[in-house]
Image 1 (spheres, helix red, strand yellow):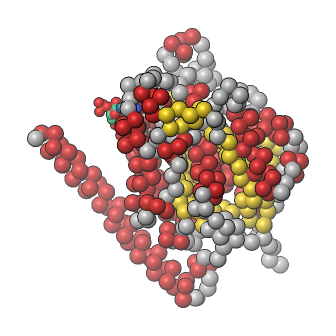
Image 2: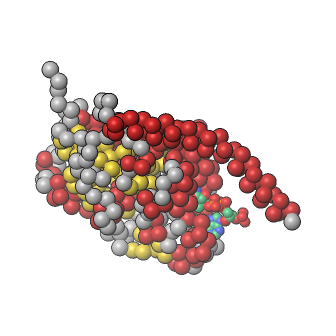
Length: 383
Ligand code: UT7
């Protein structure tokens, strides 16, 4: 007897944006930077910073309430809560239990930390609980007050990040919907590129840590940039393929909002129009694990993402980690890859084979292109 496959539908969503705006011009008064540098090098114009009334848990709850209402659920209907964050209210308790209590939910809750990739990790994780039949209704939140870990004397990091929260509610469905395919990645050998060295158990907070400013984020921006441009296109291609789709079948790409140049490079390497890659980085900067869900919520609000659309989302960050999902919003057409012996399937297979050849040639050209660029730059310097 065939058992009916279960899917996890994104049934509700919400966001919370702190009121306080910190513009590039404000930052010009604080560190040696300029609106021109930040805009051209990152795409950011302003970001939000928590007010004294905002906590990680209060922001998570504020994002969750509209998500629950849209899904037509009460907090007591939830079977599980996952809060992705790198900036919980406290080291203990996990912020997920604060959120569970504040919402009045009566279910398990856990906090998930995977740098900026956390929420996408959480979405893939929650989906498995629903697909297995273990749970029905799951709240997946990304909440971040990353400004608490910013050194406002370090222009290399403080201009990049901002605070926000966003949430979705997943419910079970028999129709193909929600996460169709995913990839969770980690390369700890690159950990040094993005770290907070102080405050953990191997280097507890003390005066020496504070004097060395080790309680703040330290980042080798160039190393993260290289890692990100490499991983965005390669992971997206793998996961889209896993879903039985082609990049052209994706209606909207939602990349982590870390740097507009990373997003543009991703679109180029995917051979997709830049307009298919959603960006709201100019308004919020990099909100860490809240970045992808916040972009998803705003894409829906702006009519860029609708019922029936297929969306590919990718996040990357500290770890180094990355996480990629292909999501069906509402119910959509079944991919030809899953059909047997149809014309549509033949055409899918042919396009997929052609894409693979082009990808292989493109990847082989990258070192040549980099070398050419380097020698061109060296020549310019010599002149
Ligand atoms: O969530 C994931 C985590 N983060 C990321 O994904 C970040 C990835 N990396 C990046 O987005 C970029 O590497 C940055 C935006 C961080 C830096 O851009 P870049 O083009 O890689 O700049 P750079 O680090 O090579 O610095 C170029 C110059 C340097 O000056 P010199 O040495 O050429 O004189 C920096 O000191 O720009 C200087 N610089 C700044 N100037 C004005 C660095 N930050 C600033 C600043 N304002 N805020």
